[in-house]
Amino acid sequence: MKNLLLLSVSAGLLSACAVTPAYVGIATDLAPFEVQAKFETPVMASEGDSADDPAIYIGDNGNGFIAATDKQAGLYIYNLDGTQRDYMPIGTINNVDLRKGFMYKGAPHVLLVTSNDEINAIQVVLYNPATDRFTEPKDGKLSTGTLSPYGICLGKSVNDTFHIGLTTKAGIYEQHILSATNGELSTRKVREFSTGTKTEGCAFDDRTNLLYIAEEAGGLYRYPASPSGKDEKFVMARAGDYGTMADLEGVTVYQDGADGGYVVMSSQGNNSYALFSLPDHEFAGRFSVTDGAVDGTSTTDGIDVTSTPTAQFPKGFLVVQDDMDETSPSEARKKQNLKVIDWRDIEAGLK
Image 1 (cartoon, rainbow, N blue to C red):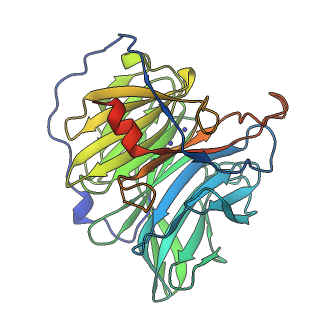
Image 2 (cartoon, rainbow, N blue to C red):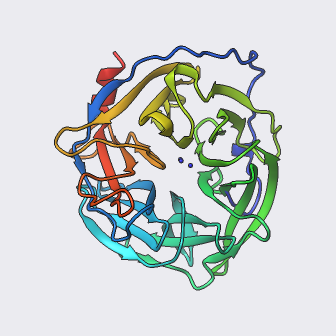
């Protein structure tokens, strides 16, 4: 698949990776530990391949939402307990990411960006915490020219510049800067490089100015997040390492302190999720989501995680797409949704 655009290149995104040792392949098939989801969202209305990618927002008051794409139709908004709050029929969007603190018409908004490779555009949705309302700006469809954006990720620099990362089925990555001037949105391309082959999942770590990208049949890679930095990639894992199996899909970052936590990646080919510890980027473990209070997951595309405490999840939670909910009448008419996992359960499996 899973978890970049702005007005000026920020010094906060300029730090690059230090020189790292050469990649050494690991082919050992390590068995995953098991966790169960605490709850799930309702299935999306579309049948077949529909649900794809989630993004989590937690506000300063502890309230928030989970946004998720239905790539046949639009954007769903769920409350933090998994119930549906809203639905926006904005088209065939594939991936979504968000950051808070985007100034628009004089007010701070949560910026949501989505990728649409059928019309070659980034589609913007804004959430105003003060009014608790979602809006789609009239100029919110931003053309990407000849690039067909498949995956998308969003980063925010220390000077509040917003970088959008775009991945493609052709293995081309572009990075753009998104700005709002006098209430008008615009983007500027600042970076392009090849990821190899079909690529979807990506995620920025705003704390350390790093970018993580999963090439579906290739591997999990780390790059400097800065558009002025080198585009040299550091291979964290190849497909098949540590028991993973292509396709490698969604990517997200669980943050702990200034540089700690984990990179989490969906290993779609064997219904599991790999964890790499930070800041050393070493493999930490792999888990699957099995039947419990709700059914388990399979063939996951997008994922997102937060370490921000909530009333139910004091250490945060992980949201993953499920390819086929147990209510599906058949493979052809499968119903898809999201599962929500307590991070404490994942943490316990790592010990």
